[in-house]
Length: 336
Image (cartoon, rainbow, N blue to C red; front, side, top):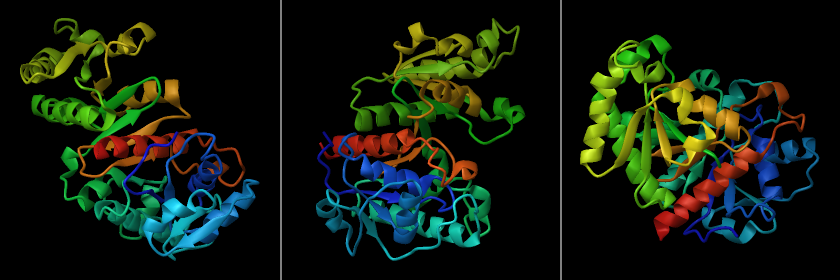
């Protein structure tokens, strides 16, 4: 059963040439089977209609003038707020599509910030194309944080799936830069944000935070690097002193083994692939990108635009539905 929400969720379209529109239409078509909470699309009524037909879906869409109308419309049609729209050309990204994606993201986020939506689910975008139309942020996480008045360093990306939750301390940077960027203060600040968010949004009273080591075998007493002893361990000790159930540094090659995954609620990882490889190996079709540390709920499916398969009915809708479901669950917990 879908959670009771103070308002429906706003879902941005993503790049209209990607798989976002067809998966959004698929999610609405499967709303009852998967117990999805009420949501509405922001813009792109013609795009969504064409994407649904291309996927072989016979669904109803209904334009709404106010987000408050979405809950009543949702059982019979996919509500679409705002008149912004464009052409549906799957697999053929262009400037007009990027402009539509940015307008949808901007308005969906603004609705969540204003309380007219109980959260925002962001569709997949192509950052290089958005940069051509004035998008100045590294990604949607930083964009949403700025819209909320939150510093980018305090908006934490967590990847969540049925089997695992991970947080990369560094994200889109060269691997050679990671040892310089990972500091005791960074681990401490992110650990606090993650622990607080798991309590507020996930209902975990005392989250268990496993901190992965930077080096193989956690440095093996300095033979493979000293960062784990000099940088990571002091941060863990400081988190523990604050009452946070932090452990580590754990050798990353064993941390995600089946017998270890049940011993923690989230893993703080040192770099992008250390966090994303296990999530994508275990929960590829159900992985959700959650932004922690914001005054609003924000989730996104943990995949990209997939231009190469757009419009071919090949894209799996699991991550999109998981992102909508998780956003609803988090919003319901905040309401409670």
